[in-house]
Image (cartoon, rainbow, N blue to C red):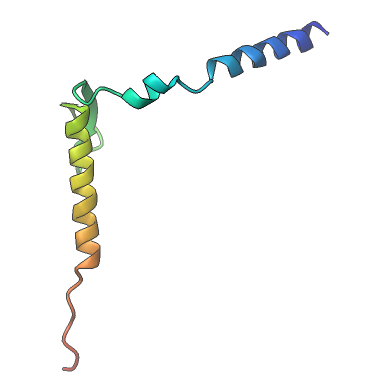
Length: 84
């Protein structure tokens, strides 16, 4: 019985913590000028890594640019001439 009460209390406290943020928090979102650092793996190496620090806006611009580059490569296929 004690376990059941404990688990019920735990579930209720977890549900309360997982509530959606208020409108002012949701509208503001993360600060685009906040600096974020990520460890980037070097191509061709399993061990070499470098740390890259950029703002959230710069990370988003990099992500968008990479996506656009891949999309351009996939949609702009050159036609091969037919015949010998």
